[in-house]
Image (cartoon, rainbow, N blue to C red; front, side, top):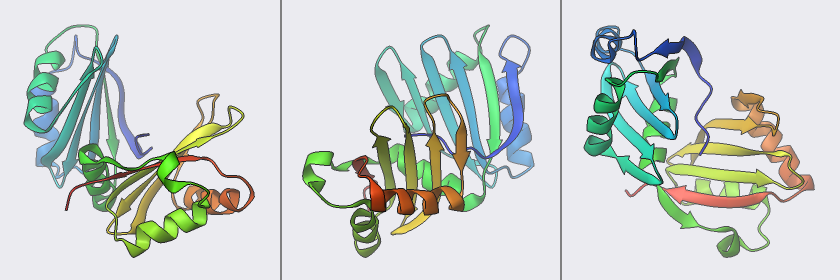
Length: 195
């Protein structure tokens, strides 16, 4: 799952000089919607907020993934350590909610389950079934990967990253996925949040 690009509010804040609890309080008071990303060597944590409230989180370290309250606790502990990086990205409320559901999602359909379905057919299925979650796309020939977030069968955000690391997101990316899907079939995995 790729994270939505959002609007960069803070980049490369150091945990050595930033009080994470104060940063959280500022975001709560400003009714912030988006996510705060905390990174260290072999660690990534993301805290999703909507209208100033924490709504979901994940924490990944040494191959172990925590979500919900356990992730928030680990994130807060980790933020007290030195030499980490904090980034803050604003999202509209709908995309923040879609990201939160994406964190909760479990695999629903694998590439094998989807067989020879075209990308258009897969997008239609997600709409018919009112899926909330996300779709991961892997393009052959080292062309990059993408993620489309869904809320009740409606695409909320699309993100693509090239192998060179260039990231793009938004409605134009979703339209590009639709047109690419008519010509080639990327590897597709669907993840669904429980209703």
